[in-house]
Image (cartoon, rainbow, N blue to C red; front, side, top):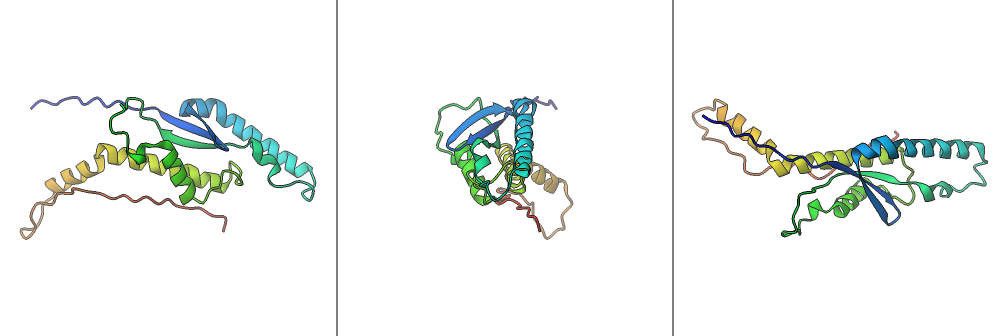
Length: 175
């Protein structure tokens, strides 16, 4: 028996920084080393400024102009034009779907809040789902387990052909 070495090309995880209708794409490493400290520092400054001013004279939307939301996405660098009609690989469709399902409004919600965390969790789950379904790892491992399992005589061989792992996300709340 010979084993073939399947070398999978890993695509870098990227982060989309959205501000109004503009977005910027950077790698996750760059986001963690450069943008995340900026976001945390900016949030700290906004919190300090809002505590020092009288809340009656300050509108909640005053600080929202400079705020951005990070969107984690796995970017497929090696894709060719091909059919290209698959909406699940389109970052804007995926981002909009996540924002809609987590009830996050980029215009009014502040970053580093619980709503922002819900979006981050949803992006992580979405990326896991896309990677798991793209490589069929879940289906293959379940099928190999079922082939090796001892089944009763009245059951024939079981083979999984499809797997639906859902498309909703958990929503955390301040209860």
